[in-house]
Length: 262
Image 1 (cartoon, rainbow, N blue to C red):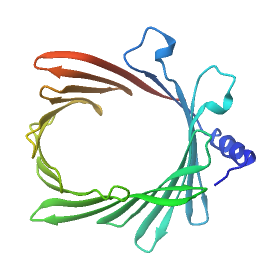
Image 2 (cartoon, rainbow, N blue to C red):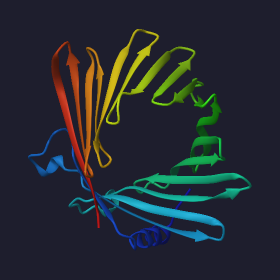
Image 3 (cartoon, rainbow, N blue to C red):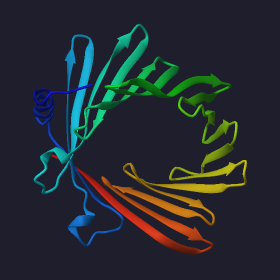
């Protein structure tokens, strides 16, 4: 699969006609030097071709370099429309400026069912990587979801069953080799807790605290393994990950990200 320089220029030029979004990240807790920053600019645009809706965009690094071709992180395009009662969409993404292969996501859905396919398309042919089905239905006032998933290359398969009613939900993930169950409980308007237990005896607990105005603080603890904290506040996202040994923390990693719309 090839994309000419003219075609690439047309995509970039059209995408840049819309307002850009600047995303600035501090990675690995390094905030004292420019090397710890990972600024990214993304452009996107949309249009229509008959009954087909079209979206496309470019995500690029912001860095001082003489190698302009190294700046794009990805270039993507998406087409969507309706076939009968089904909504169909296909999204292709190139990594950087390597147009020899594209990652393709295909989705189809109606009111209660959906199908998702991950595929790869390249000069040497195409392949399907993952197939996922989802079915939703009501049962005695509760919402039930059945979600089987299949990885083509490895042959691994599992199914996720979700049952939700009022302020409680139960999620069971089962495969031939492993099983887990998560019980989520909305304690009050601001607090939710969700412990997870696996068939091997593993335990983790997630606590989410609403801070209002779509802001939140989420902490996940895996005893004697790790602590993850994510804080979303007014467009800022701060993530803290640390190894946990008893009550001792080590190997702390901090990431801070802010999206700026122009």
